[in-house]
Amino acid sequence: MSYCEVKPEERLEYKQLIDEFLLGCKSEQKIGMEYERIPINKYTSEVVPYEGDFGICELLRKIAQVDNWDYIIDGTDIIGLKKLHNTITLEPGCQFELSMEPQNTVAELKKNIEKIDSAIKPILEEFEIKLLNKGVSPKTTYRNIKLIPKKRYHVMANYLWGILSDVMMRETAGIQVGIDYKSEDDAMRKFRLANLMMPFMTAMFANSKIRGGVDTGYKSFRALAWLNTDNERCGFATQFNKNMCFKDYVRLLLDTPMIFINREGVPVNINGSLTFKQYMDKGFEGFIPTMDDWKLHCNLYFPEVRLRNFLEIRNHDCVGGGLEYSIPAVYRGIMYSDDALESAEKLLNRYTVNEIKELRYQVAKLAIHSKIGKTSILSVCKELVEIAQYSLKMEGADEDMFLNPLIEMLKRGKCPCEG
Image (cartoon, rainbow, N blue to C red; front, side, top):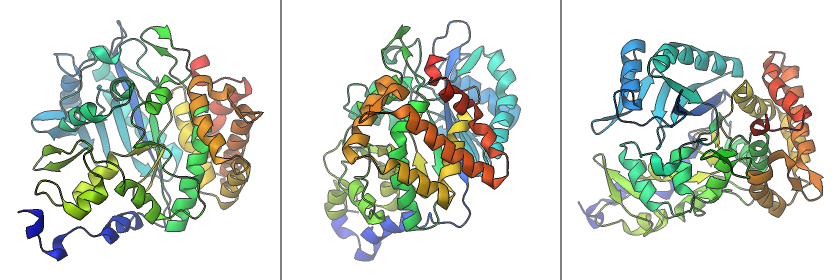
């Protein structure tokens, strides 16, 4: 059926795009976490490939068999596992991602991750695989990391034009946090603050200075890779306007070039030839826009903070040693307390939009040793953590304990890659 043959009532309407975000408003405020790690051979430290008798595909088969997970497939290829509301999925270069069902507390997230890790540990040992808590592969570079057989990733790899997009896709691993919102106003207030916080959080958890076996000169090479992936869909999705609303975010997405759409499981390549707005107005080669097209387009937009039916806060290197739980603890302490929100806003509102944007570039290289204006950001980072700590202490659920590794590290004036 061509675009022109579709009945008006069947066409995707602009109001539906905004409604998708309104559906995310919820009274219960939980916290979610996506935890990527790099699978390396425990003896050679090389990234483990997808194929082979002891490759990642066979690892997933064994986990499914032993621990009763269901397959996630793309065509006939296994690309992940699911059990209840938790998933194990593969990023383009075989990065191993746990996506946790949102919980009320960080303690519950930790318990869930430890349960899964405990179940798969014997299988990882059998396969001689270690899941590495680093933001970038320290030895194997993208030239020796094949993309997994997921159609979407191959289309993306051909489209993304940044000079480090292959590094981002195949070599890097991060931790993302999901934050709930109660209303549109609540969502956009948290969205604005999360964007303001992002460079400081990237700095505190910088953990990717070694790449290809050498010191890159950057504390977070992963953050540098994102700076050089695709400026049309990465970076800040805001001008930090206090009056920003869902409609403004939708407008940004409407003006973003499309990569592809799916039809019956097969990618239809658009390759940036039109924006979603143009697609809404005219269709593409006989295809008409659907809600699935819109959801896919939203997921192919990669800003520092992404609006979904929750807020996805994205730019943290993968870390371990307890710091992985400090990340959600900071956000839980600040985002779910009106007093903490106000304190964090007061702290960060003193900086201009240009200072925040410039800081995003600084922290990739210098992390907590960066400056904003004449101020060392280390002092600002400490204040943010203190706000979160006080908020969590007032709650009385011992969640502030998850900040202890971060507090101790900041006392020493270090970030994770510095030991």
